[in-house]
Amino acid sequence: MKKTERNLAATFARNLKFFRQKCNFSQEKLAELIDVSPATISNYETGEMWPSRQNLANLVEVLKIHPYQLFIDFSKDLDFLKLDIIERVEIAFDAPEEGFSTSAKRVRK
Image (cartoon, rainbow, N blue to C red; front, side):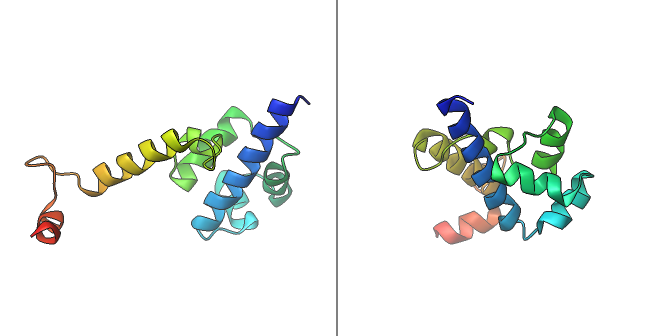
C-alpha cells in the first residue's frame, strides 16, 4: 500500500470512528444498521478493510453525513471544514424570507 493510500485509509478509519461515536453508536449497533458484522466495522475503523460502494452509501445515510466527510483530514483540509460549517449554518438558519429562521431572528435582536 502506498503512503497516500495509507494516509487515506487512516483518515477514513479515524473519521468513521469519530462520526460513529458522535451518533452514539457502538460498532455493533452501526453494523446492525448497515447489515454487516461488527468485525466488519472494526476492520473499517482500523483501516484493514474498505467498505463496498453500497456499504459506504449505507454508512453515510445512517451517520447522516456527506461522503467526503469520511475522506478528508479535518486537521489539514481547513477549506473543507469551513465549507462544512457554512453548510451547517445555512441549514440551521434555513428560511425563505431574509435568510434567517424565526428563531434566528429572535437571537439577532
